[in-house]
Image (tube, rainbow, N blue to C red; front, side):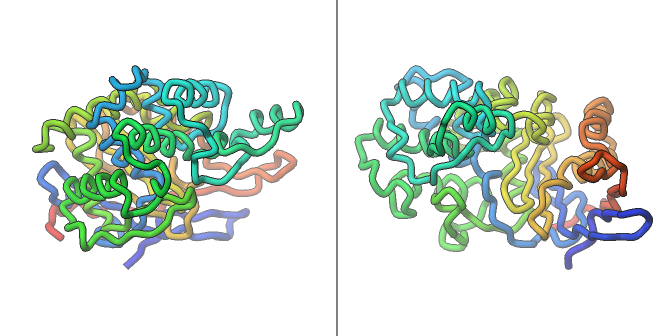
Length: 338
């Protein structure tokens, strides 16, 4: 059963209730704390990007094309089309020889408001490279090219690269391949749905790759998460919650569309996933701050940074304060199996 996570007030009246599910697992896969239903099934959306990059990195894409950590970071990003994002994406295309016409994602304007306005001011148009998933697509296409397999159909679940991704997701989550629910993501690539506690277990392994038996996957994870922590701005961008969290080297984090968010703590060996059921992501910072506070996370400054960057006060278009938001969930901290 879902549980209220946040209340949104206008004056003193509750105007919106954002419900959802939260689960925290330890390095043995046991549920250490939760709110709602730890077994709730949800699509991973972009929270799966670090996992989707594993086959290419394991296969040697970095060495084959002499890629930098910045280019790896943008391969797992939901970028905002800011100048640095665009520069790194262009370098990735130049090194791999992949043209943006090969991407199946749609043409887009930059999600970053300033970058979008600058583009329009100079007569720019929508491009596939501006799509926030462009880096993921370029990585998969470059890996296909490296392996000598067709680029066409790389978006099909039956394509060899997607089959590798499926195998990695199955192995890390413990969910048999035949039981993984698949759909089509907004960018056109296959996307998976699985119980939240299993996705949290995957994030646990991203933070603590010593738990991964396959040495090649273990090494790939270290490269991916290292790039994410050292180049957090490229993973998200200005004002993004995962970018702020990744500045703490103890955290691996990545959000996805429709309210899904994954993070993990390395020293504490905890994997955390939550889903806001109305699909909103405006609540991510508040929910994350409350989770970290409730589990007694040692980096108090990070929690303060989340609260400073995302005010709990609500303002109208004229800058007038009209309401506030408040987290209302309490984690159940009884260790259990699911």
